[in-house]
Length: 622
Image (cartoon, rainbow, N blue to C red):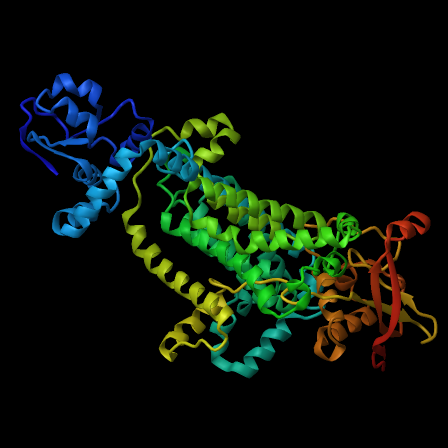
């Protein structure tokens, strides 16, 4: 409230805020307010203000903060705080209006101020616990700089990984030709197909064009790594990868593919609008988009934990799922083999820890800085363990990149080169006001759809009015907001399909894949961040039957034809001269060996034949 009958004779050039310079709690918050009010306010310790403004009693200065207007008027306590914050960048004037207009808010503010003033030691410890030693507003220039280059690297990996496989998967002589796929869909859906399947493949689906999509994306992502026209390069990378995801059918239907598209779409608006890299002249990263990236991370981790418990699978509830996971996951590593040998109590503790990270740590995303750092450590530690025990392509890298949004420049600064550190202190442009006209509506749409997905996770009967469903259905094909959740039901067995060829129908020879289990003595290898998409799809096919995986018949037909593009996807072709006359698929049940068996026989796997997956087939020959 205003000091009664008090007016300063020595008028200040700027509004002046007077505080206790000996109080560490006060100094920390003043450092923060200096940053957000910039040069509009002078901050002065009362130990120095006594000689300048003798009209204010010593006792009053020790008891409360004071605010001096340029006109000489004086106020103190919470009113002084709200007046200082009303000059801060951003919309903080509402607090002063609430204080001036509503008596209830004014009384509550006065009581809270007295509580803090009389217990500054406690609140200083409270502040240090939640925010750390540094209370200055967080900046995210370095965060964005690293985030965009990390995203460029992941896009580059994804495009190159697909580029060396694309012709064998969806090329003209591939397993599921994109041309035939688009033709069949267009015949079924007619004119609606262009919105249902947003892809540049409608222009062309030739092998040359498919290569262009992959290597063009690699070039765009490479330029993004270099920081050249980042917003445009992110958009091109996103558009090309969306096109390939549509054309890729079952081979590009994985959660990391849609996660890359969602992250890439947000990055279009997160990237600075400039041509050449120059950190010192970048406009501040939009906080709205930063929080949307964090919202994406929250949904990814929280939904991944929820789907396991909501699926009703008993092995998740009794914490025994990891007894099976390391052995039955699509492409385990040799470290995963050793984790599988651990005793049951260790597996249960590991499973409980995983649930703690996936269900509790995501909420740290929305808490003050110190707790966000703890959340970063927990989430990234889980990703490291997953990456060590299984090959999940670029998923772990992409999740780690999303976790990077929890760090501010102060957290990153000690680990970066000096030339980048120096650029942070150079003059930067102000926030782009016009960008908010795009980011705010975008944030509303993405947050709303994401919230609906979380609600539907718990309430399957939850439905929306038709006028809400229509725009969501229109947006859905662009993979802007997606539901997540891996391994909702744990696979307890590991069926493996072994493809065999024969010239006479009696003597059969097996084709060997590059990465999936086959040879019992083959050590489980590391292949991530590359994704051998055929090997992955064979894992899913083994969980079903040949009728529900018609693409597998196409695969076997291509082997009978001797398609060179398809054969490049394999490690060994037992018929190098001419294709076989017959092809069949056998089903085996694979298990990890134990330590003793491995020591004696040198095998990593043991298997048992289950029967035919697909009976012998052959091509009709003229």
